[in-house]
Amino acid sequence: MSCMTAKDVLKAVKEREVKFIHLQFTDVVGIVKGITIPDDRLGEALERGAWFDGSSIQGFARVAESDMFLMPDPCTFRIIPWESEPGAATARIICDVFTPTGEPFHGDPRGVLKRAVAEADALGYKFNTGPELEFFLFQRDGNGSPSLVPHDQGGYFDYSTDLAVSVRKEMVARLQALGIIVEASHHEVAAGQHEIDFKYSDAVTAADNAITFKYVLKAVAMKHDLHATFMPKPIAGINGSGMHTHQSFVSKETGENAFADLKDEFGLSELAKQYVAGQLMHARGMCAVLAPLVNSYKRLVPGYEAPVYISWARINRSALIRVPKVITKEATRLELRCPDPSCNPYLAFAVMLHAGLDGVRQKMTPPDALEENLYDLDEARRQARHVEMLPGSLGEALDLIRRGRTSLMLAGGAEATITGLGIGVFGAMFALSRRNDD
Image (cartoon, rainbow, N blue to C red; front, top):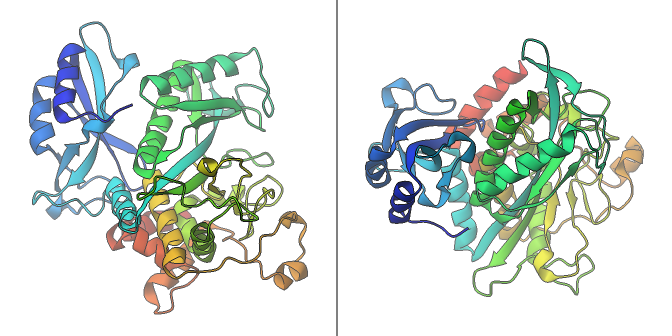
């Protein structure tokens, strides 16, 4: 879908009889927030922004500094079909957050990602991501509250004739109506677990899509008296939900995939290997952002195709970073497997990028790829291969960040996380996560 201008948006609002527009943004933990304005206020909002009080938003400003403005991004204008009726349509626009002085607000997660992307751009690369969000659908009880009863008993790639398929089809249709290109949908391993994959794009658009994805799926589920959850491990003893993220660089100069070298054993360029090395180096420090809940670490355990060890490979799905085998240069990418769908995608992509760029800038060399099943390694064999483990709990991940912030020798790759978020966002996330872990 081509990017619209402010003039295009105003024209569409008139032609489509839009009466209300949701101006959306996210807080530091990735929850959609926003205000709704009538159509006659949109022109002013597009030109000057819309004022709001940020003092009660998680990770935003203190009361004394709470005046902020939402600047709508015309490229994200979409009609919301299920909130529209003839003559009274409703639309949404995703916004950037600014201070009263006209400066981008440092605590805006979308702004954090934009600043990270600008660093890659300065090096001559466009950063693309393709997240795969898994989720569960649970039944609601007699009071309408979510239960832990899966809405179906299907398994991996099952095509059933029950509610599962019809609900997924409706979810896909609504995503497509909002301009998201869906590539496939299917049942996942666990009962009630699903995955819908959408096409990769530049990182900011991909994060916008991930936020929209959650918003849409929850709305569809509620319509069917179901509850959609992106909790990483809602039920013990079964597979959890991940947000595997595919990453690549496109050269601004040539327009080609800068991660690709089909003559290489893994099909990777030196740039890609440096990027891998940076993410492996900073893996432990990234986890507080990529796996931000206490529950996240119930997923990151052996035996359920979730990564535990800091390694990379091609075939091995127990590795932290996987290099999918491809035929064309365009499809070359790196799959990071530790993120889960509870994370804020703007902050997650920013931290991933900063970690990878650190490897590029320092021309790091990754360790040897490990194709064996890492879950079978005992302690002695793991140490002999110098394979480290991801944090085993949110507390451990936060301690890495705390030590990284207060020492000259930053611990466990925490520096990329702090740099990627900025001190303000980092401090807010750290405080919220620490309360979560207490």
